[in-house]
Length: 333
Image 1 (cartoon, rainbow, N blue to C red):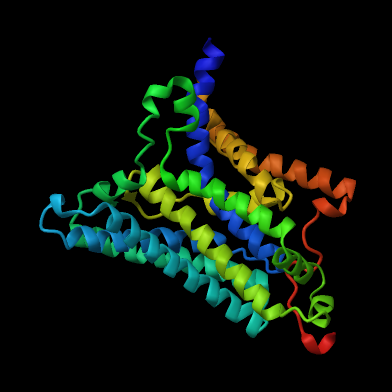
Image 2 (cartoon, rainbow, N blue to C red):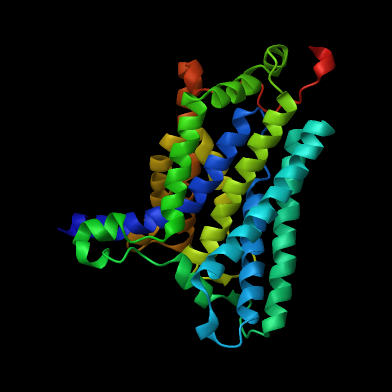
C-alpha cells in the first residue's frame, strides 16, 4: 500500500514536471530532423513563457473587475503571444544559420543567452510595475483557466488522479507529440524532412526545397517549445513568473531528444521518466542538500548511458540525422 500511495503521489508530479520538457523535446526533434541543431531551445522556452506572461498581464490590467474576465480571451491572448514570441526566435535562428550560414552551435547558445536575458529583463520590468514585495509576478486569475482540470476527474478515483487531473496544455503536449510522430513517419512531408536532415544535397537534387524545409521545421519546432514555457508558468507554477525560475528544463528537453532517440512518440513516456527522476529526491527521506543535487543529475546520467548504448549498437534508426548541425551550401553539391 505504501508503494501504491507513493506512486499515486509521484506520477502526477512527474507528468507535470515532464510536460514542459516534452514540449521542448518535441520541438527540438522537429528541428533536428531538418538537420538544424538548435541549442537555443532553453532561450526559446524562456521567451515563450515571458511572452505569454506579458499578454496575460496586459489583459488582466485592462479589466476594471475580475467579473469582466473572458475565459476564451484569458487563454487566447497568452497563447497567441507565446506563439508569436517563439516564432520570432525560430525565424532569427533560421535567418542566421540557414540564410547566413552561421555556425549552428554558436547561434543556438547565443539564442539561449538572449532568450534568458530577454525574459529576465521584461520579467523584472513587470515586477517593478506591480510593485511586488517578492521578486515575482502573479497571474492567478489567468492561470486558473490554464490549470482547470476535467470536471469528472475528482469522481474517477485513483484513475482520475493519475490521468485526468491536468490542464489542457498537458494533453495538448501529448497530442502534438503523436501528430509529429505520425507526420515524420507516415507522410510524404515527413519523408522529405527526414531526407533533408540526412542528406540535403540529395534532397535538393530530388526537387525538395532545403531552405523551406529547414525554416518550416525550425519555426514550428520553436513554437512547440515555446508552449512548454507557457505551460510551466501558467499551469505548473500557477501563473507566477520569477526570473531564473525555469531552472535547467530547457537543457533537459535537449537531453530528452537523445533519450527518446529522436522519436516524438517515445518522448511522451521518456518525459514522464525524466520528470520522475528529476523530483524523485523529494520522496527519499533524510537527504542532504548536496545529495539532492546529485539526484537531480539522474536524467543527465541516464541520457549519457542511453547515448553510449545507442552509439555502441550503431543502429541507423536510433541515430540522429546524418547532417545534423551542418550548414548546407548548394554550391558544394
